[in-house]
Length: 116
Image (cartoon, rainbow, N blue to C red; front, side):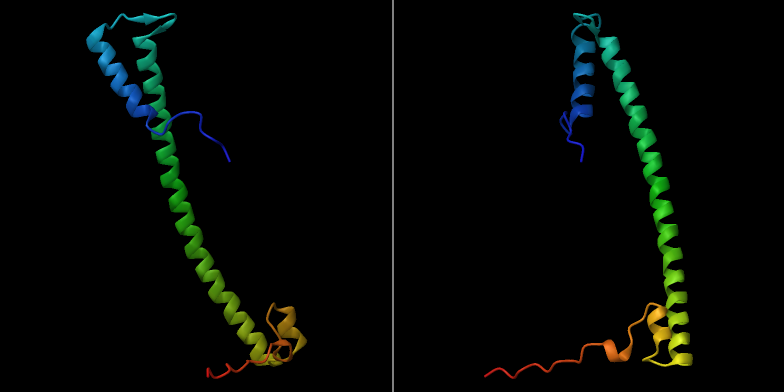
């Protein structure tokens, strides 16, 4: 996946630096970099974070709705397979076609050997 080329605390460090530079010298320049440009980048970063947070909330809501829907769908799948099993039998080819396992194809239960 993506590897970050910045520290996790970047936003906090940049806020602290901007506040300190405001107190030291608001007109300080380092080449073409100014305190105002740093603050503008901080504002843009905050907007990115707000957008991402809003999208994460939407994504969480969609995942919850999907999970609820999948739960209902799973109940229907189980009921329909049970209906096929009831109508055609446990060992029918129809139960296999419906995604179930025929009784004759199941592994027999093995007994545990007693410990000595």
